[in-house]
Image 1 (spheres, helix red, strand yellow):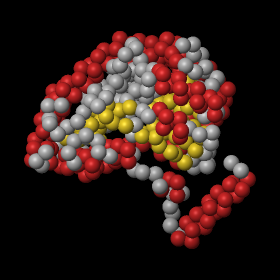
Image 2 (cartoon, rainbow, N blue to C red):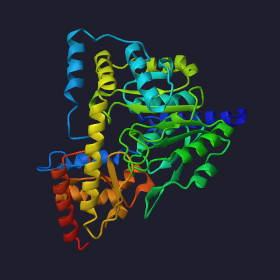
Image 3 (cartoon, rainbow, N blue to C red):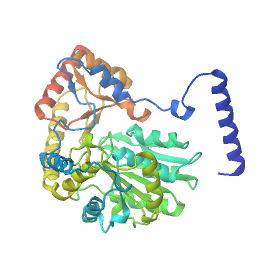
Image 4 (cartoon, one colour):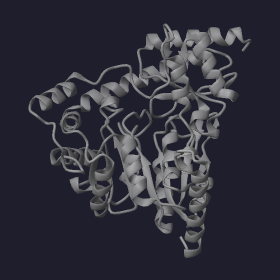
Amino acid sequence: MSESEGAVIAELSGLTAAKAHADGAPNARDAVRALRPSQIREVANAGFGVPDMLPFWFGESDRVTPEFIRDAASRALADGATFYTHNLGIAPLREALGRYVSALHGATRADNIAVTSAGVNALMLAAQLVVGVGDRVVAVTPLWPNLVEIPKILGATVQTVALTYGPHGWTLDLDRLLAALTPSTRMLMINSPNNPTGWTMTRDEQRVVLEHCRRHGIWIVADEVYERLYYGPGGSVAPSFLDLADRDERVIAVNSFSKAWLMTGWRLGWLVAPARLMDDLGKLVEYNTSCAPSFVQQAGIVAVQGGESFTRSLVADLRASRDHLVNALQGIDSVDVRAPDGAMYLFFSLPGAARSLELCKALVREAGVGLAPGSAFGAEGEGFVRWCYACDPARLDMGVERLRRFLSTRGA
């Protein structure tokens, strides 16, 4: 930022503060007040307490965390693992994650790993490391709103590049993305496999984007939380920027224990980043959460070291649920749906979805079906709804039948 730009921002900040003082209102700062609230929560709040509700709105399975992971946490608590740990995580977990990431994506040392209090905390920390007031960020959308809003909290501006929907599902216009990634861009935020669409970036697309970002010194923050929930070609893990980038490049990969090991409520994640960032990252962790809970980290070790067979079984079940739900929805004439390559959602169109929030609230009231509105994922998501299929197929069938009846009463 130039000196003159800094002066303008300071002046505007001063005017904002003076206005707030003059109003006498105890408001949060403007950047926070401008954040969009979660429309998924808005729909869920309307559905809480509704009898016989079928909730498919949140991104989590209806199954509890596996017993072997819960038992590990219980043992750790019984052994007194209730104290502060190193900011970046306990050494055994960082080492276990280093081996896990190395097996999937090539040599990765514990020095490149930081343990965080959930994947979303890792996203915030990654952004805090590299983004500041006035920086320009690019994000591929539709997208889980946290990734778009986090840079705004830090005073950055966000330009979105939309995926397109067609006969082959959701696809990326690579030329449009490259055109948006100008030399003035500080960071690219990209989520693949994607929430909500299930779109998964190909290795060739990643290679082109990585080379472009290298030339212009652009940071890549890759949300790869769904990398193991992958049904496309090439094995048991989605293509990753870690497959292509050296560990000392401007690439930060964010991950979580929430999806592959069903640990949503445990709030445990990690990121892979250049080792030279770790000292500064440790300071940010200290000023955010200090550390992840010790007994939760102990459970994380067991998940990483002993959870591979569980994860593979989970993905097989999710693939079957995906195919089951796609086939059922394709039996409704007015629904347009395609099977995605990753994640745990269908993002599809149906009558009324041009006003998706209104539609989803009506589904709650009139059908007892809870879906997430496409508008929750940005303007590019309007016209669609998201259905999380990580549940028993019988519940999916009940949901489809209720949706069919709902649409028939509306003449769809």
